[in-house]
Length: 159
Image (cartoon, rainbow, N blue to C red; front, top):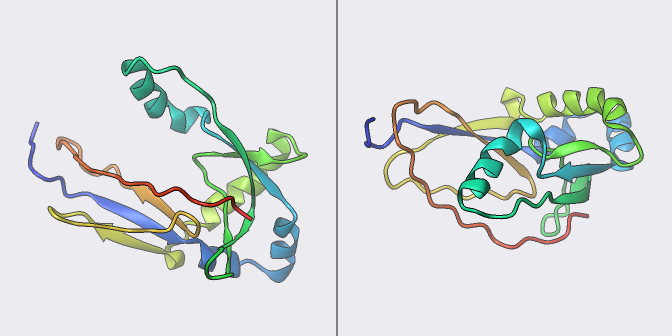
């Protein structure tokens, strides 16, 4: 395995733009919805669960409710606030009822016109605001060891 820096990219998607590109009627519908988010979505939690098990940690499922349309506390702008990795359903609806609308939103929020691609190189540093940005690390570094350091700042309660 090569231990040199991998030629890796991360995609960032602007959720202000994703929200603003929706029709006024659709935004009105979404503004009244609350997303149920969980750390246990099977397709995305496997890596997290494997790491925790290997470390001997107790697995705890985290569940939270957040508005689908989040108002940023500093800018006052609305942003789409659902995530394919964590949003399971809408409050008051079943997973099956929620799935078609969530599927649409998950595809919509990462459309190319809302997205930029960041190329990681040795010494790269990136900051993003999880309150209005989606990020997706591209798994394009097969054969390389990827070493990254992450700092997460405590946030506020989504409104």
